[in-house]
Image 1 (tube, helix red, strand yellow):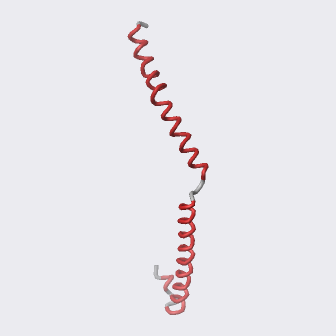
Image 2 (cartoon, rainbow, N blue to C red):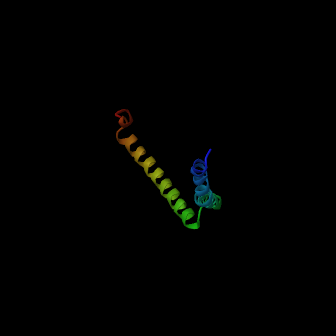
Image 3 (tube, one colour):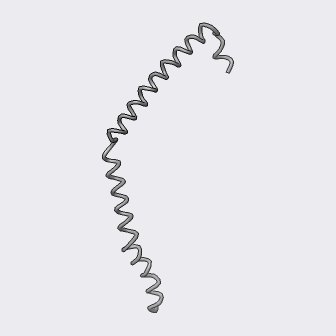
Length: 79
């Protein structure tokens, strides 16, 4: 191999080692750190609020189904 061919092969490795690899590693470990921290207090509060709303929605659905069962017993078979 002549010097030109070696330079063509080595240059991408040098660019990757100097620029791409460090940025890649920094971003990788930053994302790992965020995953390991868990939920923030704001996210936890939001999740709790959503869980409460889901419980209320479930109760409403049960109430509506009970009303429909008493007023229109065949409503489930229509679908």
